[in-house]
Each structure stands twice: as C-alpha cells, then as structure tokens.
Amino acid sequence: MNPEELLFAETHEWAHIEEQGGDKVATIGISANAVEALTDLVYMELPAAGVAVTASGSFGEVESVKATSEMYSPVDGEVVEVNTSLPDNLEILNTDPYGEGWIIKVKLSNEDSLAKLMDYVAYQKQCEEG
Image (spheres, rainbow, N blue to C red):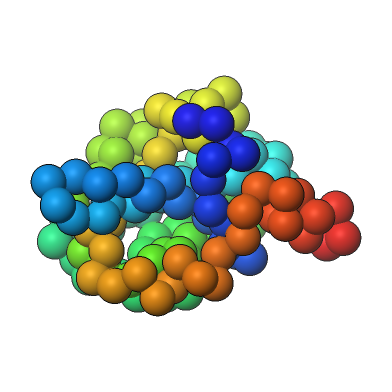
C-alpha cells in the first residue's frame, strides 16, 4: 500500500479503509517511523479474531530490545482477521510495514473515529516536530 493513501493515528498506527461486502474494513498496521524508532523487534502480541476494539484502545503490544509499546486501534469495530504469521516474522515490519506488515483487519462499527485520523502529510509533519 502507498503510505500517502493511508490514515494515521497520533500513536503511529495506520489504517487503510475499504469496502468489503457492504462493510467498511480497516487494515491496520504500525508506521515505518514507529518501526524505526522501536529498532530491533523481538515480540508481538496480537488479539484474536472476534475481539471488539475501540479507537485509542490497546489491541496488542510490540516489544523491541529497547522497550515494550502498546498498539492502539485507530478505529472502533471488530477484529475480523489477524496476520498470524507476523509474530514469527517481525522483520517484515522493517521491509514492508505498509504491505505484508499489516497487523489486523477491523470491520468498522461506526466511522466517527476516522475524523480524528491524519492524512500522510499531517502525520509526517507530526513526526518531524516530535
């Protein structure tokens, strides 16, 4: 996916929204900036399909040699798919954070949370100022 077409949360998660069978589904991951800041990733904890998530609520964690960081959902909804191969292949986040490095897919329960997300330009500005 092209990062310029994604929406970003202040907490460095990205979302790609698409229609699937009449529902809006968000594919969610963490940004290249977040992966770079975390450096050597060693562990990732993911939710199960069927779990409800809320915007700004934690859905898992990623651990590096530096620290453990919570991952926060940018949207409200239900986890419908999990990238179960990711925890055993964390290097994918270094090489393809916006493609094969997706983490979960969430069927949106409402679209209110989308208004709080940033486009790529605004996210890059946040990263430069941060």
